[in-house]
Length: 283
Image (tube, rainbow, N blue to C red):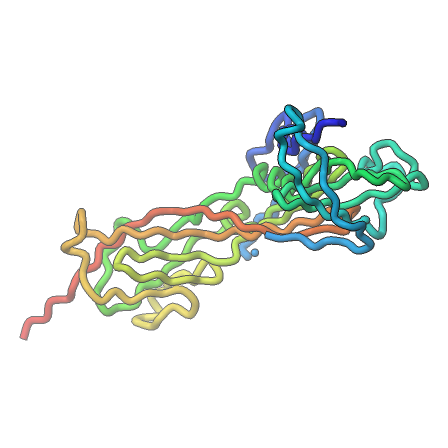
C-alpha cells in the first residue's frame, strides 16, 4: 500500500516575498506572486457537488498495523479543472475525476481517482494551506497608531479620538497567489476591524482606521472610533494607561480550478500608552 502524502512537505517554498510589489518568488514546488494596492480603505471553505461515499484513507508511512483509520469524504470537483491542469497529475480527464477530500482528522486536499477505483488515494494538498502560505508571503503589519500619542496628555471626561494611519501594509488590501502540487490559490487580505484595549478595563471595536481629529471639531465625539476615560492614570505604572490596538486581517481565498474558496483571519497588535489627567478647577 502506498504511503499517505505528508501535506506540509509539499508546501515549503524556496523563498518568500517580504514586501508589496509584483513578481515571482522562489523556484521548485511553490511559486508565489504578490502585489498590494497602496490606498486607504476584510475559516472555512465550500465544497463541490457530486461526491462519492465516505471512505477510509490509507495509513500513514510506518507500521500500518498501528496507524489509525481516517474517515474521509470525497466530492468530485464540478466543473472539473481544464485538461492539462496539474490537479490531473498527468492523467487524461477521460480516465477519471479530480476529487476534493475532507477527513475526520482535518486532513484535506485534492486527488485524482481513476474510473472504477474502489480504494481512494490520500489527498495530495489542502488548498487552505496553500492560501495560508500565500498570506504568509504578504506584509501584514500591525496598526500604526497615530492617537493616542505617547507625548500627548488627555483629560478625564473629554472624548479621546483613536485612529491609525492606514497603508497597504497596515490595512490592505494585499493579494498573493501561490501554487503547490496542482493547486493554485489567490488570497486577498484586508483589515476588517481594530480592537482597542484602552488599559482601563474597557475595549472599543472600530470598523476602520478611525477619523483623525481636527481642532475645528472642538469637544465633539469621534464619528467612528472614540473613548471617554472616567478616571486619571496617576495610579497606573509610569502614570499612564497601557493599551493595545489589535487589527484583524480577514483573508479571502479562492481556488478557481477546484471551485473552492473560504476565509480565515490573522491578527496583528501594536501597544500604546495614554497619560490621562484631571482638570483642576479653582473657585
